[in-house]
Length: 107
Length: 119
Image 1 (tube, helix red, strand yellow):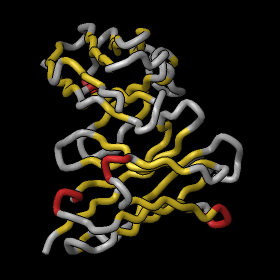
Image 2 (tube, each protein chain N blue to C red):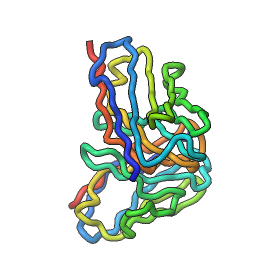
Image 3 (cartoon, each protein chain N blue to C red):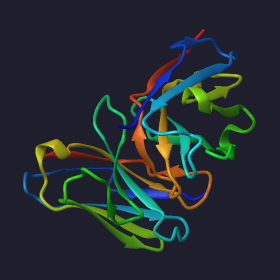
Image 4 (tube, rainbow over the protein chains, first blue to last red):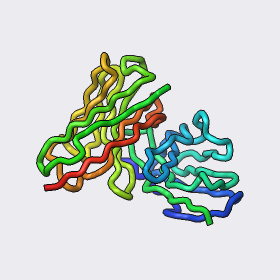
């Protein structure tokens, strides 16, 4: 199975701050990576797919980058509504696997 | 617009079989490239992919659940199903169904259905 390691496990950011979350795959996943945001009591919402493509309706302050085994999600200007837990997911091989999540809070 | 909604028993006893239904609209599982998957999340924990079923009836399962999973679909009624045999307290979780495409990411999710396994 492809292991997905996310970091950090949690972080807090001030309004307007740039936030970066990392995801490392245990092998090359050829940009087969998605990022999700989950708010308390809600289902995950797709933010980024194919490592860097923005899902329709997602604010442009979210961006994804990376290749090979290293990927990152950037929020260019932290907003209150960006609080939540962020997960990465590899879509290259079955079984599909998710990172353990990064909890993002407002400082 | 695409919507999905899960339904299940809510609570069941250890060793019983869990039967989940995903009712969806806004797309068809008979359309080329369409897929529905099941993912679960234990309270406060991460996401675990369980199974996918594709428009052509291809099925993929998480081997960590060995042979306990069966996924199926009813294209005419826009539903997908998941059965998990021999349920244990460790299977207590919120179960989600979600639509996936050819790149194996989930673009629309249902609200989830909570399943508790308890004697």
